[in-house]
Amino acid sequence: MRFEHKDILDIESLSVQDISMILDTAEGMKEISKRPVKKVPTLRGKTIVLFFQEPSTRTKSSFDIAAKRLSADSISLSKSSSSIVKGETLIDTARTLEAMNPDIIVLRHGCSGAPHLIAKRVKASVINAGDGIHAHPTQALLDLMSVKERKGKIEGLKVSIIGDISHSRVARSNIIGFTKMGATVTVSAPGTMIPRGIEELGCKVAPDIDSCIDDADVIMMLRIQKERQESILFPTEREYSNLFGLNSERLKKAKPDAIIMHPGPLNRGVEISNEVADGNNSVILDQVTNGVALRMALFYLVAGGSRNVDTI
Ligand code: CP
Image (cartoon, rainbow, N blue to C red):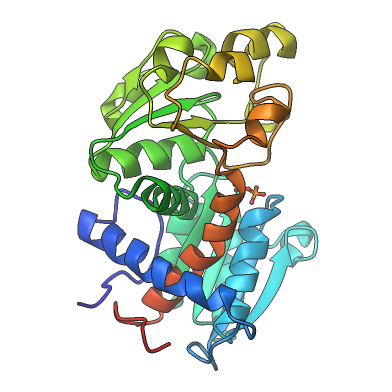
């Protein structure tokens, strides 16, 4: 079975079989990062451009590490270090990069749809590393991987996503991804942070966090995305934390084996307390670890690899 996609732009474009193939491949890739020499020659001679027009710690570094573990040559560009600051358009930037014959372009951009725009214009594979409030498919895939690893399955699980749903590309991609893989997704947030029509993505909306966490197998907390909010959406952080934050007291209402997720970066003391973020139920750092294996799998698959990674 071959992976048929040139680009990874959103979760909608991936079938259940595609997602299963990606997760199986990532599971195989994880072993490479545990070897004394964490490098295989699989993508030797391939060139990967990491173009991040918004800040990133975990997505950018894990894509870079993933490229290096597969022996690809990677270069990094940021908005401030590129000719975008001199007025060059995104399309001209993409065409300029294309003229240097890269194999894969990874793009993070503040505008929804930017990776889709350049994917139509370049021969290189384009991987969306987060576009505006639209999609963060690689985050959703590593979240699916982390849940499958801890729970042994995705189908039938109850997943609660709590926080700034309106401005979260992670929420959108995860609602679509978990629903597609057979989980039930419920979201909760202040009314000002729930977009109208969100149920059309296949999730339910809970009026408060308590009714959302009591029977959840997976509790995913989200940061308030102040950088994307055009107006104040809640009175104070303290009030938000009281009503929608996850702390040890509130966690007692959840199932003992519920896992706590967060895509990061965390605003400790706002949406999640220190004790919960660092507690036994938290898989937040597992998510980061799996991000490397998942992105190795995507590089491998879009570069033409098959499902069997045993021989890598
Ligand atoms: N989860 C996530 O996208 O984190 P970064 O912004 O640090 O890449």
